[in-house]
Length: 206
Image 1 (spheres, rainbow, N blue to C red):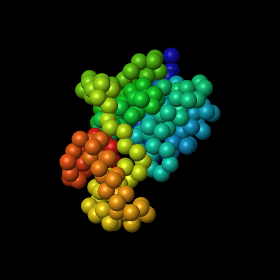
Image 2: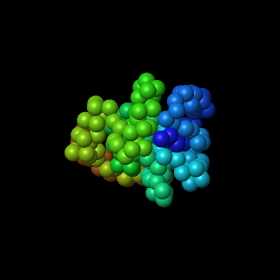
Image 3: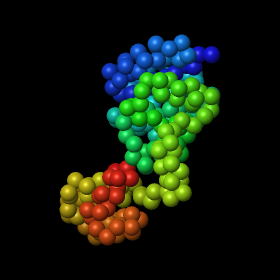
Image 4: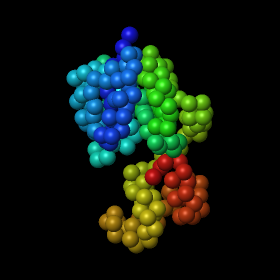
């Protein structure tokens, strides 16, 4: 039985490479290509693919995690297999929580992608053993939940911005920025700016 696949990646060269790999097998048939999450939803609604092979970063608009959640809300809903270069815990866990059937890194061999597509279509979870262990650990010890504004402050903090510069950028007072930093440090269990930035980068919060 042939598995139908929709490719979603904002790089045309990557999509062409994936199509070449998948077209070489009799078990998978590519029914469409999308460069954005919005385009993926339109094509998925039209073609009803068995599996959507989706990158995590899609430029402006919906990212891979948001696209996954939206695709899984369709009826019928395709299985979504993330294929990306990003392997930070927050992104892996976020994709799985959004409903992705699996998560593969682009460094894997072509046969692993084909096998992953087939397994995803069959309702299986597709994760390398080390990624599976990290997902399980993340579910047992979930990442701290930062508000959107706290993430904004943290992103600016990572650029080296001072409290005054952050306040000016976000149109708030310095006192408000300090309050956000107190909450951020508490949630991340850190005692300073540099440590907060390092933890946020390591876990994919920014």
